[in-house]
Image (cartoon, rainbow, N blue to C red):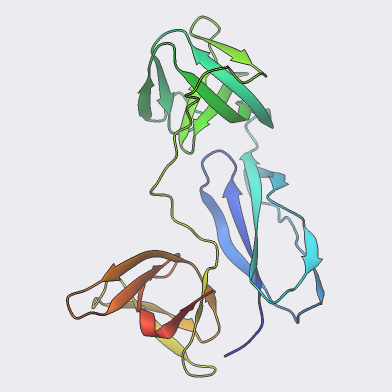
Length: 229
């Protein structure tokens, strides 16, 4: 099993967290430097990232998220602001009037917003949850740079978002791969290589006292082939 610790690069829509490109793995020896590129993507442009585009390989896996916005948008800004709802307001799954409604936000509620999008038609949108956006309307809400002096400032967390940060390593026969399955005891749908860093998203214990792990971007695997890190 290799002792190399790769750098995983993820390419995402900054607003929806949609994966725009298959994750890219950088390999190198401990102490070597690396540089991450921001590839051109059709209909998208690079905005920013979750860390640094250059660094040094270490003895633990690292990850970086590269964020893009649709080219049809005017701008995206990271902000630290707060919204007070003066009436009942609906939120949407993405900054788009044609997207589906996700929630009804109650009158006199307060919301934290970390991201602002200006779409092609000039509409300002504010993120108030992992997949929740409101279009700014001065008649329905007020904005502030100062946190309100109240106990409950809301932000909708999506508990079902799949973790894709490496937190385990495949421990199989050297230089060989083992299968992953569509479900525990299900049909094989792919494989992972000994030494690969993977992300466990779900753990399941069955009646035979076996433990199965669901791996992000892969499938299910028997836990005997996985070492948590």
